[in-house]
Image (tube, rainbow, N blue to C red):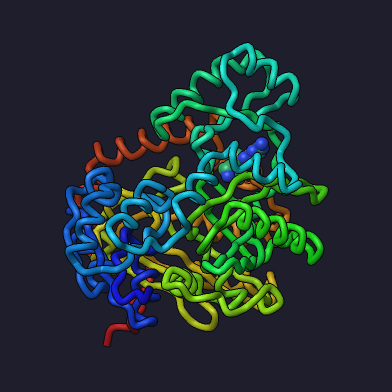
Length: 498
Ligand code: MV4
C-alpha cells in the first residue's frame, strides 16, 4: 500500500521530525494543532494543518475519533502517532484500520500483548529470557499479595499491569509499608490506566536502564539496532541517553539483541519498537517491558547506525521489506542525547512556560538539534516541557562528551529556564565521564537537585515555589528585561553591532 500522505497525530519536536522524514520521502504531511499550538513550528512546516480542538490534550491530541475524522477529510492514507498521546493505544490503531488508514506502528494485537506487563513477562519467561523475579500474574487481595512479597523477598516494586515507564510504580522496603503502597498503587493505576491491577517484582538496587531498538518488517524479518543507555532519569523522565552503553561489551550486546528480537518475534511485532532491560553491576540482564512506539531517544541509534528510523517506519508501513539483515547493521562511534526541557532543576524542576525571546542553537560537525520551537514561540503550559533534543556523535565516548559539552555551552534560550545548566554539570561530572552510571546517578551526584522521590525533593519544590512567590511579590518579575542579549550577558551573537 503506497503511502502518499501522512497525518502526524502529535506535536512538538517529534511532529517536526516526522514531517521532515515525510518531506524527504516525497510524502505529504498533514499536521493537527490544538488552540494552544496554533503558532507551533510543526504547523508551519506541514503541507496542510487542521485545528483539532481546545488546548487540553484530552480534547485534542487524545481525541482519537476527531483525529481519524480529520485524517479522512484531509485525504491522508496513513497516521503516524509519534510517541506519548495515542502512540500505544490499541483502540486508536484499530480505529485507523477500520477507517482505511494505515497506522504507522505495530499491529493492535502486539500493542495489547506488550501493554499488559504481566503478559509480556509470561512471553519472556516462555522464551527463557531472564526476568526480574516477581509475579507473572496480577496479584489480588492483600493477604495473597503479602504472601507473594514474602516469597519474592523485600525490597519489592509494586507495578501497574497496564502501566509502564514507571507510572504507578512504588518501592516497598519492608512488609509494614506494603498495605499502604498497594492502596496507593491500585488507586493510581485505576485513575491512570482504567485498571487497578498490579503485580510485584524484586526491586533491583540502582540498576542500569538499557534498552534495545528493534525493527521488524511485515515479512517476518526482525533486526536489532544495538542498545541505548538511559539510566540518567528524574522520576522516570529520561534526561541523557547514549548509544552504545559504556557498560555493554560485544558479548552482552549480542545476548541483549538476540533476546529483544525473540521477544519481538513472539509478539508478532511489526515496525519500530524498544525492549527495555535492567542490568545489574555484574552484567546480569532482566527483561522489563517492551515499548510499542518510536522513542524520544531514537536519534542516538540513528547517528550510530546510520539508519533513519522514521524513514524505516514509513517504508515498513508501506509494505516494504527491510532489505537488510542483522549482519548489515553495524554501529560506529558514540552518540549522546540531552533533553532541553523548559523547566528549572535548580528551582524544584518547576516548569517554565513563556515566550522564547532569544534562541541560539549549536551546530557544527556531528551536532543535531531536533527542535519543536523557534525564537518568538510561546512555550505552552498544557503539554510536556520538552523544547528540543541536542544529539551529538563522536568517534568515541570522550569525543562525544566533549562535543556535547561544547554544544550545550553554545545553546542559548532566553525567556524560559531550561535544563541546560544541569546538563552541562552532568557532562562535566567525573562519574559520567567515567561511565559510572545507574538509575541512582542523579540522586547520587546531584542530591541538591531533588531529583528523586524523596522528602528532600518536596522540600526543594516548596522552597522554589516560595522563592518564585517572593519574587512576584517584589515585582522583580514585572518589568521584562530590556534586551534578551543583555540578559544572556553576551554581545548579540549575530555579530557585534556596527
Ligand atoms: C524497576 C527498577 C528496579 N527494580 N523494577 C522505571 C521505569 C520502568 N521502565 C521500570 N523502571 C524501573 N523498574 C525493578 N524490579 C528500576 C526502574 C527504574 C527506575 C526506578 C526508580 C527511579 C529511576 C528509575 C530509572 C529507570 C528504571
